[in-house]
Length: 304
Image 1: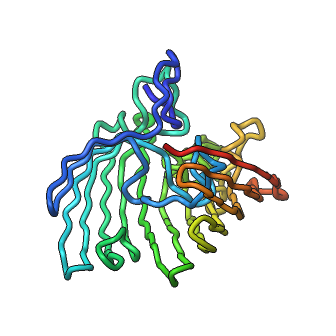
Image 2: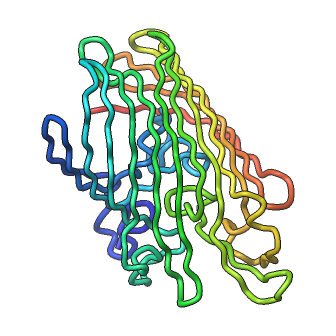
């Protein structure tokens, strides 16, 4: 069994992060993979965040999951096309451990469903798509016990927009419920507390909204800079009417997180990477002031 980071939780033998196997035709691709959700295909540019992508927990739905996907591409012209993607996904759950035999989605006896439609405009000469706009949707059932079942869902948007030869704008946005397994809602699918009216314990799915955007500036062929901002918000209405224990798992008490990032990436040679980066992370419980972390990183890497 794999935990939310894609690592084996017991034997320590498997440290898999991402993998994929594809069958490609001219207009169709069938893929089995362990990677980011189909509805969230992008991530900000950062070499300082490796175990988790940049803005994880601050608007980037990223959690790598087993999936089966089919993509159908419909050409409009030599440079334009529409792509239709559908898939099945087995998302993790923040409360899942190696002791449990089934995650809440697996316990429902049906996979999660995901789909995305996107519009692409290729760059001159058939280069990598320079303009992409996509809309996605996700749905799954979470079974906790005979009385607690949650419908997890999301609608998403993503964009990749070249503003000029030197500038590019990318980003994603989402709105949904019980997205903790994908990295939303402050990494929680549900909230459990005492109902202020009935006095009994109640569990609800966490409604969340969030997203991120990045501006990339290519200063030269070997130098670029990136500025990005991300927000994940477990809506305050989730906490209304519930009394949460102060001894609850810390993530249960958090409602919002924002991150601002700036970095410089220098590649003096194709394989060599040097990158200083600054991150400012702010996180709030549903009551009280923000917790603030300032992170400075200097990364050196070799790509092969």
